[in-house]
Length: 330
Image (tube, rainbow, N blue to C red; front, side, top):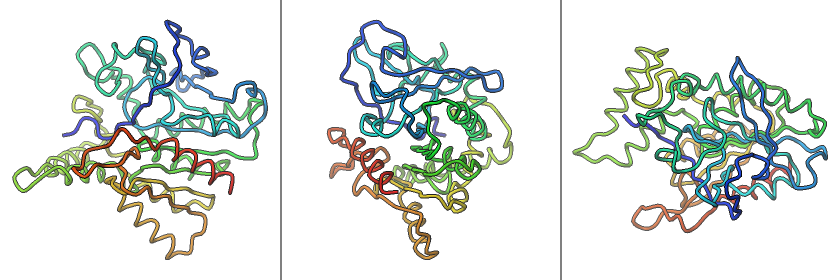
C-alpha cells in the first residue's frame, strides 16, 4: 500500500530571513479562528501597500500531506504557494489554510520526507490523521471563507476557489454547496477519485511480474469493509480513502459558474480530465475551460525521453499566469 500518493512540489523563495519566525516576516498576514475547538491558521498574501484595499478573495487549497505552510532551511525559505503569487496579488487577496495540528512554521531539519510533520517514530500525528478528511476540510474552509468575507478589505463581487491535487477535490465540493463561489480552478485533480489515481500510478509502474495494482484493490476492499476506520498506520485512514475517492465529477457537473480545468497530459489523471472535456462538449456546457499542458506531469514539470521528471523546467508560474488570464476574461 502506498503511504503518500500526491506530493505538492515546493519552490525556493529568493528571500532570506535569518531566524525570524513570524508570518509577517515572510510577507503574510496571519489570522487564527477556532473550528470545532481546533486552531486554524490562515495566511493572507496581498500586494505590498494594498493590504487594506478591497479586492476579491482567491482561496487556494494545497495538495496532500501534513506540511507546514512555511518551511525554512537556514536562510532559505520555501514557497508557501506552488507558484509566485505576485501577479495574482495585484487583483486578489490570496489565502491559504494550514493542515490541522501541523505547526505553521518549521525548519526543514525537523521535518520528515516530503517536508512532512511527523512524530518521533516517523509516523503522522493522530490529531492530523483523524481530521485529514474531505468533509472536515470542506466544512472548515467554508468557515474560514465566511470569516474572511466579514473583513472590510474583501470585496464581495467575486469569490475564487483554486485547488491543486487533493485540494481540487476540496474546492470542487465547496463550490457545489457554497452559493457565493463565482469561479473555480480545478488543477491536477482526478475526477473519479483518489483510488483511481492510486491505481493509475501503479499501472504505470508495474510489469507482468509485479502486479502492484492488485495491492491497491485489496486496500480498496479493506477500506470499503471498514469505511469508518481511523487507523493511520498505513498512511491514509480508510475513512479518508473513502471520502477522497468519492468522484469529484459529481460536484463539477452541478456547477453553472465558470470552471477552469488544468492538468498535465502525462499525469495519471489526464484521461479522466479529457473525458470531462469530451462530455462538456457533448452537453454543450459553455462554462468549462480546459488547459492541458502537453508532456507535463502532476506538477506541470515536463518528462524527459527516459520518462524521468525534468525539474529544470518550472512551469508553475506559467500556469498561475494562465489562471489570471482566464479570471480576467471571465
